[in-house]
Length: 371
Image (cartoon, rainbow, N blue to C red; front, side):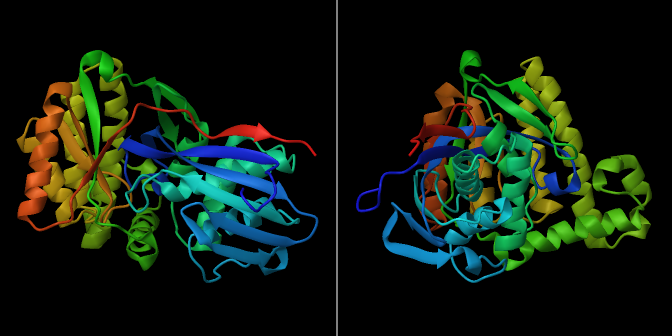
């Protein structure tokens, strides 16, 4: 920690890609994400006072100093609010020095915020011997983002960042946080999942995310159900007259996406990647048309990928920017990258970035140094 004292604990947590199941975690649906190899690391040292010092290796000159008594939900600030929110949610009452480092691309829809929250939560849980299990940590990290930062996200990102295991996607039931590991080895079938960062950076605190969640909750209330998990697509269509057009569109995405996610698990188990690709593309169309969270750059990436051989492609993450994924044969990846780059250049968009990752492990403690 350079001029700072050596850390007592070091913890890290990954970003994620959601294979399918987008914008349904807050409707208590099923999602199928996996952790990626890009991670955020938190080095934490206990202090003998109530001062909190935070800095990032990426912003080394921007040290933030505050105190335990100033931990207030909704307070102004930047990225450090995700760290402070976790401290508040975990009920930490002693000062700490926290230094952040990592390589999860920011604003790319790969959940850099959850990686940050979960790395800090894992480190603090160990440092202060809180004894919290993985479900509790995920819920508290979500609470930090919901109540302290003010982003009404669901539970998916924090859960996969903490609970993921290498080599598998994680089928997560967002109602009870039960999980099922689903083997996800594309390489053995000659396939690859390309991650396309459009570099159209998004921000979820502008109200658009909250508006969609509110529409889903309003639809549930009008249908007299606890969440959209409790209605099937035929009943929803029959009940359309009870909803506004916006509520119906949002609910239609949520209900159909839950069905697609469970079908994706079934086809993965039998390695039917053609059907998986079709489901992934259907997800994008639903997000684009019913949920209206795509953007021109995301649509361009998906269309170019599909036109040049991808089995399926869709936007991922909160939307309004960020990343897309394309499932393709390994031999097609180079041509797909080139086609997307050319399409972006023709449209005068920022140059896209490309990543790939095998399913990685979740949050972990790297080091503990007892005083």
